[in-house]
Amino acid sequence: MSTPTATPPPPAAPPQPFPEESAGKIAKIAHLIGRGDILQLLDDVRNKLLGNAFHVQDMAMEFAKNHTLSDASDDIDNAVQAVSGTWGGRAAAQFTTYSDHVGKALGDQQDVVGRMSGILSEIAGCVIQTYSKAIEFIGTCAVELGKLGYKTIIAAITAAIPIVDIFTSKDVIDAVVDAFANLVTAINGLFAQAVTTLGDFRKQATDLVQSNTDFPDIPEMPGNSGMDNEKQWRIDPTAAPE
Image (cartoon, rainbow, N blue to C red; front, side, top):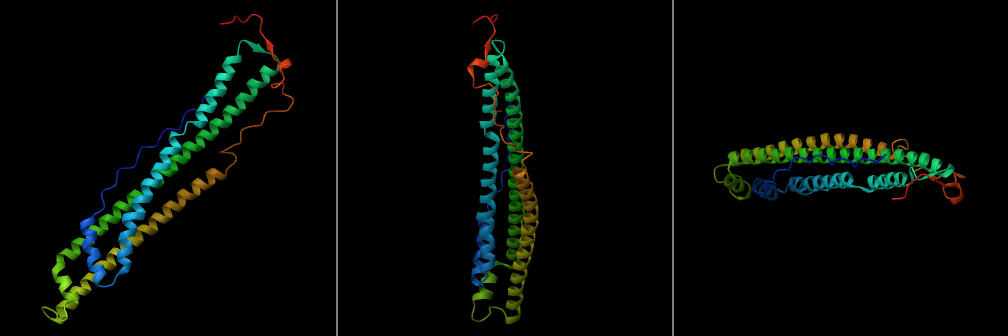
């Protein structure tokens, strides 16, 4: 009747460090041309995506390591073993039957805890994967800007008189705008895909918690069972004391 403890899910692969250098170059150009949306995008990838991934992963591990239900089941099992072979009578029979029902309820609840831990682990994996793709897109944008030359970009944006000619400067700025557009499109598409995936996980979790079948209540002690009446217990006279 002992209820197994939920097996901790394997941790998601550790994410790569945030590309501070690449993001810093992008942010500097974005600031010069007044692209607050690019700055916010970089901040979301650095703080919200990565921070949420670790938070959800910690929640998954806490669910998996919870021993409360397993310990409660072991306590009941030990109580059954303690009276078995020594105590009999109507109360003892009722207690054994009742303990089986409680053990089954605890087992079903432990299964729910394990499944919830699995869902949370998948959510963490999804967020970390989204973060990994996002920093890949940041790197691609930084490479595209690097091809133009950061000094050339800054000069084209800040110089009162273009250092080469107005058409060359316009081409440089247009190329920067295109690189930013590609970054926004790629990461927004990535976020949209992640939201859909996370929505599916959320529905699974909600259905799991709301299901009375999957998470049954501990049964109440039946009335007139005799378990709380010492007169309903009988000691076996053949039982040898330890």
